[in-house]
Length: 425
Ligand SMILES: Cc1ncc(COP(=O)(O)O)c(C=O)c1O
Image: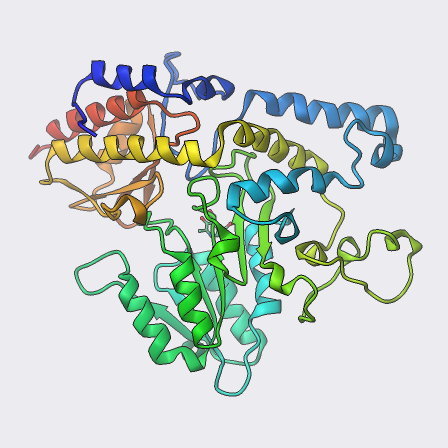
């Protein structure tokens, strides 16, 4: 793409964007002066779809009118409610319906998956994780190791970038798995790193892990709705993700889980609850857990309908837009952001996200060279909503669903202006 550093070019790109009408389906936050913010933070919290309110109101109305009978008589009966989301969620992450369920929240689901897929025995006791994994994932892995009476200092292998580098090299992941695979019970990596934005090839990593007899799972918090994940084809044993980032379901909303269909009827250790029990006999209130075939067996509780309603509202928009078209736009939009940031020069800032579009989603992480948060504070004052991650990164995510090329141009102009206004700028 022959990008140009001017507003007319950005506007023309917006004009030509086949997904341009989707922006209008979302509320974009406003600044105090009434101007629209440049919202580039969908990697942290996605925006509210306009149709979310109506979806929630429907459930409130049905609760008001039916009380408990809403489980059967609501417009969208609550008893099978989670099933309404399954196909659309499966489409977003590239899976079969039997492999996908919406339930709980991410860290809870990660624990549930480790109960089933981290089974240390003999010498095979270790979990392979990234050194800069999201802290919650590390806490979860360490506590699972301790739960088995083992020591995290001995059982957690941390993948580190090479000295002077921030992203992992896939060949280093491969070498670690090949060299230490016989001691590894579980490979558990972030599929898109929250800090660097690096996207890992799940299919390769799964193949390397399986070749060594390891189980393989991914935290797709920053991948779901951002990258077509093709989880089924990747072949990993499990994946977990949240829905409040790219999937726009609202703060603290429920997570998604994938368990590959090869485990659909396998006997695995599992923490069980009544919602995972055979639907035909669930209400007979009998002893003896009969798992639903597939990932639904991992459900514990009857689901929170209000949170699910918001996810469903958002998934309908994903159905309309399609992950493939979103990805096509993301390649152009993030490419434009990269081009404009590079035009600013590298004296004060540097993009640490891989330059290979296949190794990233829509987020770019911009490292501020003196680790000074002032630059971030200044662009925030100018109406940019992005985020600062310690120690030195501004994360910026132009989300193809609702961000425009004009957003990206405006952001880069503000960034440039504020860098020029720095004492040595
Ligand atoms: C990569 C990653 N993993 C785990 C979490 C924790 O998610 P939750 O609070 O929903 O458990 C987050 C939250 O932002 C995250 O980004």
